Length: 362
Image (cartoon, rainbow, N blue to C red):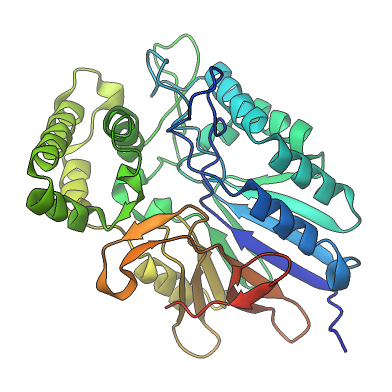
């Protein structure tokens, strides 16, 4: 006898939807990261039918669902994001993935089905209410937005970029306004690095930002592709000093920020410590769910205290021994209601025919 579910929540993150698989001239869009529209549409269909048809189902898109940082190479000042720029980029993304937007809208049109966005470091355009309105036009009026974190029933959901110095937003000052004709997003150092360094490298090495950990990748380049490795390090060093000592005080790092970024530079945060701190200091929280670092993770920090990282639905190359190789793993968190507290698990989506199975990832 099949279980009939009354209420579940599903969390995914880091899809990085760009402007579509093809440019207007028909050429391949090398800035596009997301190629699994069909799989995600099937995911939505599966959890809106069968044993879930009458259930209350919420899909939580936990940051970096959209990739507003990498749309095209034609912009003169790609790091200057005004309201107009954010709307234009968002419209390109949604038009580039119309099938996904239509699937989300249909999902929300069904009884007791909800879509919720949590902001990440790649989609801060949703700070503009006009961008939220545009998304709701494509995805449905019921769409909800959380700009920092989303808490419910003892579960804490946050993207995770705030625990990495290079990608932290100043939450007291999301917009730069002084001596400016209109507000622009006050983006972190990591965003500027991505726009001015990574984007340029991706012209010839589209896989460049899909290799983890980055520090290990640099060492690998020095051994097996010395010329490109030296060029990459040179670009990073030049940008680092330019951003530290640039004349524009609005975009200049403090000495403390510079020092912390240098310490973090060879690493890619596992976020375990941040999750453990939240679980240890918040008696009302029994589960923490992050994204951001693209590493699917399930950990227990004592009885009834669990941490999940939902990873990414982008194909990644890992250089760590425990996960060496290139693979696509469509992981998601599932929160099931029925007991005293909701049960949280990490699962892998393998398609409608094979359904979803619990992930064995640590």
